[in-house]
Image 1 (cartoon, rainbow, N blue to C red):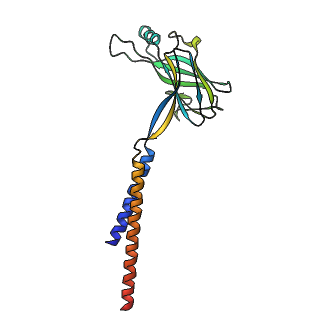
Image 2: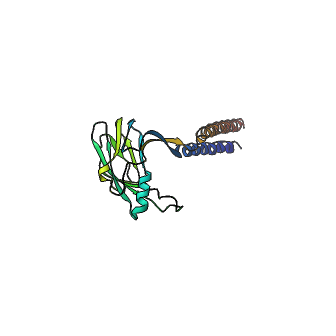
Image 3: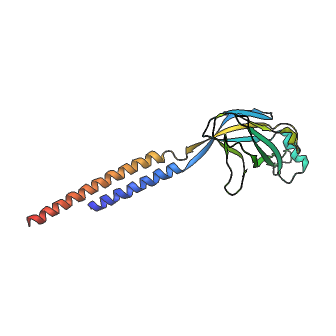
Length: 219
């Protein structure tokens, strides 16, 4: 019975540790708007070091109409640059693509589906790219190594498939949050409870063994 109490405590402690690890590992990525340039070729944001950022370039009505009447079947290129606080630039080419609209009265909405980096100011940025594809990503996403004002600009002269500025250029910061925050304190409580039970069981076993030893000596 005493050994069962001890083993039960160990099992409860392991369950608590599993809850702690699971709660800490399951994260939600929350994006919060930092800055936005509406109906403009560029936007500027003050970014902080050691944080992850995403830049979203939204299609304007003109871009949607251009896609509708252009009959495009392949993603269309849009050249952009990111100017770091030191004045050096990161050059990239974004590709926009749209599927057919659900309603015949609506224009297809081109979305940024791929990003190819031509050059990177590695002193200020660390770009996010898949390990197996060099300098290619599905979004403009990067880690800031040094803080300051960063500007994202769409290069108007290279925008050949449509006209006019995008609807908006928006900076977002990514923040990791626990998906199940209650699991960490609950797991901690279960783990502590398991330790208490196992200690109680261990002491009970120790006392029982001591009594048996004394009984044998008296015989």
